[in-house]
Length: 252
Image (tube, rainbow, N blue to C red; front, top):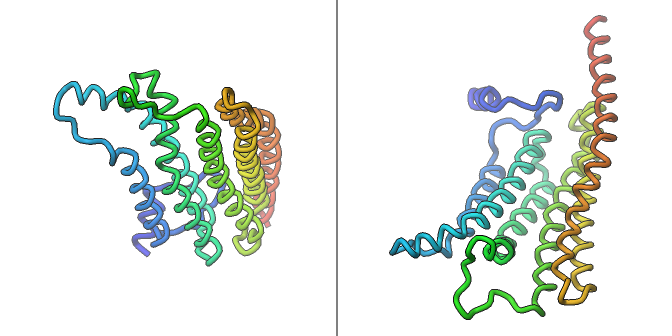
């Protein structure tokens, strides 16, 4: 009880979304360890520099590493928020969590390879002289691998949120929390679908321009710029209803 109270004091919940997760569970501890391992795998192939020239060459890989780290941190944070909001520890949620961790670990190297390839050239690169990182005919496969991993991650988040929404009565989600859960489920479905679209487009386009299929991921930003104001308006209305109902109950 003391640990749970301290945890809630140290990590304040969201303003309008009640957190049902208490103290850190073994599942969350295992998840944190896997994400830490994934970050380690981003740099494990780098040797310790023995000269300043080698150090300078290693530092040129900082930007690709920073991008990969930011993406992993984003996925970890979304998982953390989900765990705090709903506190689900059922067999199905544990299974989906395991699938997410598997995908994260499996796609660490494709993620690192893609951003080293795309950003490495801009900042000096880390390729070996005379040894190209990729051949032109392999670009569609690389785009498909990355986008399928992207789709897999957000598919798992969509399934997790859909599961929480279906259990909204058991979790005692109020109207605002239920609507927020539903809207985020829709957003994750769109993100997963966009990843699938990129994978398909990469295979259909000519090899010379197949890499441009990755720019379709920006469709998510376009979608969010359109739907976010709509979702926020709905959520504000639901929150006002919840507060009005709470004030009425308190007054009576």
